[in-house]
Image (cartoon, rainbow, N blue to C red):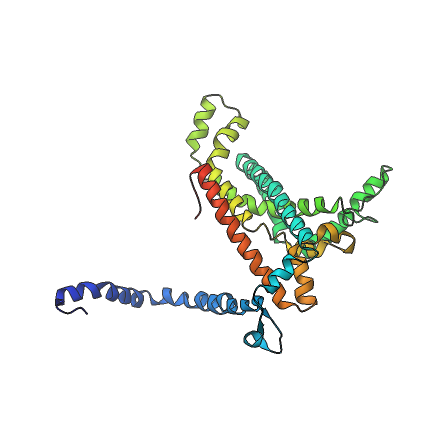
Length: 317
């Protein structure tokens, strides 16, 4: 309390605190629910960040996190100067960008088609078939892909052979494998991503479409000049968020699909970290790569946000 402060001024300063405590007591059950997520994030999310210091140490499990020798940026240098660095970066970025360029347009097309569909039964069937793959693990998806595309007895190759055509190594051919990765990812995720665009479409003013129909605009013109521009901010948001994870090319998918025959075109940062960090116990190196990915992702988000702000006069940050 400041000297010379009147009792009235003191009451005014203490009023917000009293109101806060009264509010907490009145809604204690609601505030109590926050304890669980706060404890969860504090222990399982933010707590382990302290152990990220092993990225800057020559970590030995025997010495522990605090007892290991500090080596600075040696682990980062080891990764950047490794023989596979260029190949890993190339594969990771190309797969991420290819998935972005294929999955986002397909998701938009699917969402617009479902929005424009007037047959409720047909819409429900298509929605179910489109959303279902998202809830299947890559283990199950890999089994489905084997049934369809295996060289020996895969359904697709059996059909090809019935027409006198030769079978194709869809999953072990270095030229075909990248296409399978991108298309299978789009198949699995485009339905789920379409939900975001459908929600955005629901917010469009119906009077815009009615006015366009009165003016004689076709369905394609309505989509191109009304629908797409109306959901442009959402498209920008989705693309921006995906650009921030450009170094995450999908470990679960790649781990299930790749094999030694396609290592050259299938090995990404995450699969390399798995082999180095978990199979060869180089935990410090794996942690350093994780921090490297996080920093690059943050930079990409910030740069993308500035570009988007200049182009659309809107931003996320």
